[in-house]
Image 1 (cartoon, one colour):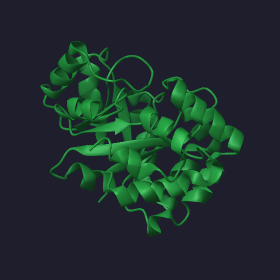
Image 2: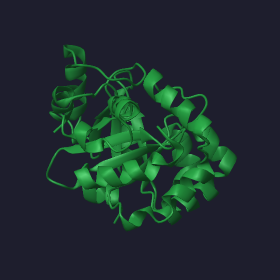
Image 3: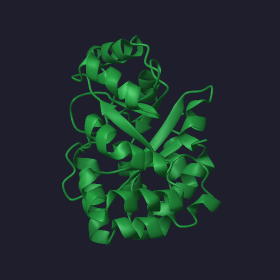
Image 4: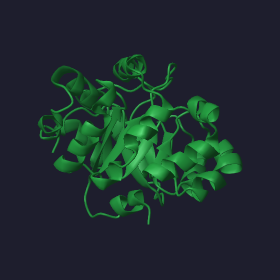
Length: 253
C-alpha cells in the first residue's frame, strides 16, 4: 500500500511540511528529511526548484532560486534521495512544475521516483484532464499518486472530477493568491473550508497556503484532514539553519 494512503487512514489530523530541495545549502536535503522523520510530522513535500514558479510566493521563489544557484538539479535530487528510505519512512511527495519533468522525460522521471521511494507528486501546472488522458497510466505503473490543487474559485463540477480522478488527497489552496505565511484566516476562508468539507468528497482534504503557526494550523484542520506548511518553515530554515527543525515543529503542535 502507498505510504500516503496509510498516512491518510490514521485517526488524527495530519501535518505535512514543504521545503525546497537543496536549501538553505545544497546538501541540506537529507538532513532536513531525517529531522522531519524524527520530530514526527506525517508527510513531507519536497520542492523541486524551477526558475519560473507560477504558484509560489516570494519566500518559496527565493528558496528555489537559491537552491538552483547552489547547484540543485533533478538528477542531483535523485542522487541525494538514493538510500534515504533506510532512515525516512514517512510519505515523500515531490512538488514541482511540469516543465522540468517533461525535459527529463515523464516516464524516466516516474521510474526514478519509484527507485528512490517517492510516493506521489504535486504538479500545479498539470491540468487534471491532461493528466487523466495522457499520464495517469504511467504514474500508476510506477506506484505514484498525483495530487491536485483546488482554490476558492474552482467550480464544483471540476472539484468533483478531481475527486473522481484522485487517489491520494486533494490539496485545498486556502486562497487564490500565491503561497505565503499568514497570521490568521478570515471569514471568507473559513466559509470556503466548510463549503468544500460539506461536499462529501471521497478524497481527504489537506489545506495549504498561508499556514504559519498553531492558530492557522488548527483553523485549517477544523474542516480538513490536515494542513501543509511551507513558507513559514522555509523562513525558519533560512534564519536558523538546517538543524533547527524541532524548534519550528514545536511551535505548531
